[in-house]
Image (tube, rainbow, N blue to C red; front, side, top):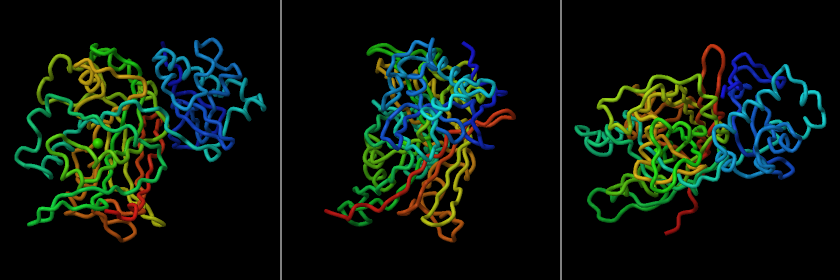
Length: 429
Ligand code: CA
């Protein structure tokens, strides 16, 4: 089926500001709540949120096989479970409804009032009920930097890393939408030199991790696996993902079983899921792999995406400082390899599961995806625009992540992924 929604020549009768992340070619999916406390599934064009539940009730999706309440829900899970054919039909239809040549909704004042909201009239919620969250570790530069900082510079990359897309199972209960404040976590840390008692208290080394995550549909039953050729069919779309990390807690707890409380206190996502279909024009060459992977991980065709990434830190009441610029294409392992690997043992993947890429670090020092790497564990503090310095994230700092793709015709973006750090609860033993 042709993705007519992607036609770069389309224009909408809704106003779209220049350089908006959300032209009519994007049509992402999300969940929002209106001032009247109505929760609905929606999309966004320019600075307008569009109520898909209302559009469906008014008959604008006639002819597409959808259940009556598919958009009148507080998560996209059921819609995602409908599969790629339905996603495409709905995106194509939305593009037609809002196309500048179509007057049906445009000229229907009452319908428009029911369907279209300004972004400042609504609040974004989590787009999916995340059943399972897996975090990969798929950037070679990040794995090398962390191996150097935490373990052994001589053997920074573990011997398995170039053969296996490394990952671990995270907590889905602490995934929150952009804008949710993040309380500094409390935990144990390594005993000070010459002592035997671990430290305990608010994390002193709070960090962000610049990641993206993909959201899957129902993919396989227990015991079945997804081949790499079909893996893409099961990926609905992507979000920006800030996988907050407490480096001092992490450094003390992570051996031998890996990340735990230093990671599980919070992860922030951008609230609009940008579909893989919308990202179609931005496919790019897969990274060259050092070793030919095992056959079940061998990729054909372009499965990487050119998505520009940026991180800024904004101290309270002060100007923002951009601290990193990176790109999703730096990932060593592609999403299809991750999904094929995830299911090779027969573990089921379901609609609404979320797979984090792992921190995305590029080849240059200004493209690293965490403060741990940018400041080299605090040795080279970042000079901020307000004159202060940062080794890690301070209380009342806001971390802002952005992502967009761009070519000569169109810009597809993700909107901001924002979180402000609040002080730890008053310290109790
Ligand atoms: Ca992570």
